[in-house]
Image (cartoon, rainbow, N blue to C red; front, top):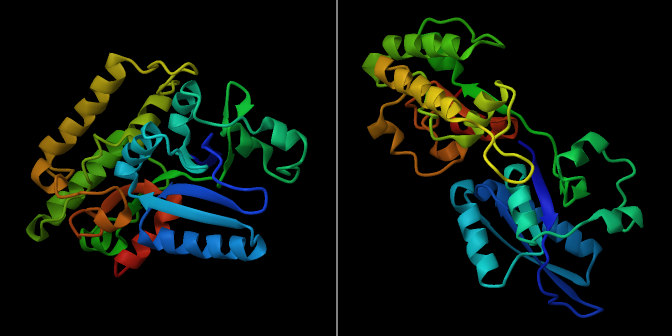
Length: 274
């Protein structure tokens, strides 16, 4: 999943000399701190531009964004998940950046062109990728060692992961540690499940592409994980109130694994002793 930085079609709140832009993005406080430093550096280089921003946890970000849009206050710069691009395009909320790229107002001549493809809808460019990112499984090496298991393999099947996670739960039962969180509600993980079956979640016109069998098999897998004890039970999973590393069961010492993204390695590392 690649996060995108898109320009919305908000109202012009500037004069010719001085401009004010609004930026929205998701993430924890640590990301906000880095973003504010970047904003300060930008404003020092462009003294006639002022940027106001807000941020929220990913789990509530789009609800907050949609509320702002409904009130007529769409941000000028929007961090966007590529899964939602088509929807916002259909609602005419995003600006076609193609003319600005063609006339070099936005110079992307040295930009990775394959990354730009992820920012398009039907061949039209609506954003500029902030970078590549990967879905991944993050683990606590100390808990793995305590469970008496070897280093997790670099590749495995879903069933192999279930067995490995179950072994962790069995070995660390006295500590109340489970192998895996219950990721049945994680749409980004479900997206991988669907893609392994040669599909995408949505068609280019926003319709559902996955089948009833796809989602039934997904929920069946996690039902099996719960019944075997390989993943955290409902009462433990329900304690997770956000989507970031700091609220994960791994950070709380309740699971050996966490689902996440490659750009979160540093945050997870800082939250554990390993």
